[in-house]
Length: 535
Ligand code: NA7
Image 1 (cartoon, rainbow, N blue to C red):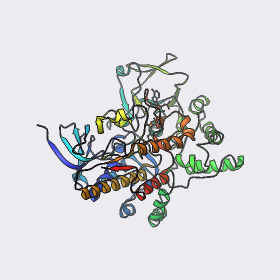
Image 2: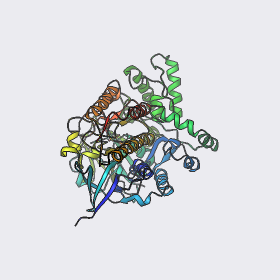
Image 3: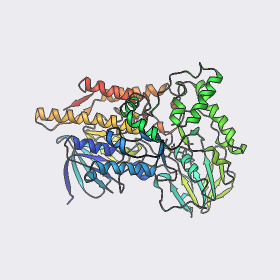
Image 4: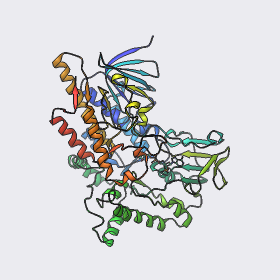
């Protein structure tokens, strides 16, 4: 006999999103549980323990804004947080707010089916337990399902094979011959962290990216005092901006600036550090005008040429496509390639043909021998977290079916035919610093639940809240429109699903920014939730 538990709500995932959802549901007085397949809280920051893992948002903004007292008291030493510090912070929040008793670890959602008669979700988990809940909230992160490349001979390798997001904490790379496949955010962080420690590091690069410095440094006591003093103004600025990275996005046109002005601006941005700041802090047309984009791109190319002394390596590391993927930054990335022990292989001209017991063979028939192969090959992002699960809404329609032709959602939060079901950081969430986006989405979910509870009390009947098909399609069309004018759309990346063979090519983010997203939510509430049906 399966153990069945009835609750008001179930939260799936105990990372940044799930923790805030728990805090919010408790405030609403609901009975709920939060499950996570992991052994502890942290989500992304629980799983991604690879060397060098860090957030590229400044420390004072990579946290919650809803606990002012904690913001002012909780210590941080540098202007960026490393993975262990973020994990420590999340554990601290859970403890401080006594949320432990709502958490159930090593518990994985297997299926969720909506019952139209009772307006409840029947959720089955891997431990055999069944939950009957009125609200199902998924907080499964943007990037949880790893992508492994399909290379012949993968299983033959006799050394250690590891994906960055499934890092083995006992793996010591000291003195090892290491292969690194992938040069996205993860690949560049691993490079800067391990290059000085290994016997050799060989980076297999298919698409080199534009990587600017982070500008990581200690936070002075004066700065810290300034953050505390200006708490309200700092968060108001973040919520009023597009990227929520703590700077004012520039509206200045790069094309209207003189060559000398452009140079000065980019030099300042480079020296300040931060990928989003470099892309959007100096000029407003880098991601929309091909000509402006080329000015920024050629600046970074020149930097690569100046830093990397070996011309062959510099050539492999130099990107030539648009500077229009998620902007990257890392600590002294290009400098690592001046070490004799750090090599590059250009996969565009010399692809990998197979993996053997000893290492990697490339098309030129060279066998590169390794002790460890690291896959920093990314994720089946956003919808990828959902399509492998059996989540069925009204009429038995599954999420996989819902997204079989294209990707749509309302606010990255709600789907038509999926009543009382809410995602946090689902597809078409705002493209910005995640904690403030999570807060905006959880606050939207809170008001929808409150409104639904009110409607139920008034009618004295079980009820549900569901976004209309029109509202979902209209929001998704806005996402497409916003992306259409952007060079991001013309550049292949996981943001559009291009990194997974067979995945639907569609816009998976809301590029209008956090401010615009919050305005939509405000108007929705002001207009009595006209995009939702309470029935
Ligand atoms: P990304 O950004 O998706 O990067 C994955 C990297 O792996 C990228 O360089 C890919 O090259 C490369 N890749 C993927 N498959 C292969 C194969 N088969 N052969 C060679 N190279 C391959 O993932 P990250 O983990 O770095 O970052 C994800 C996000 O996490 C990041 O944007 C931040 O938001 C945090 P490609 O470019 O496809 O040629």
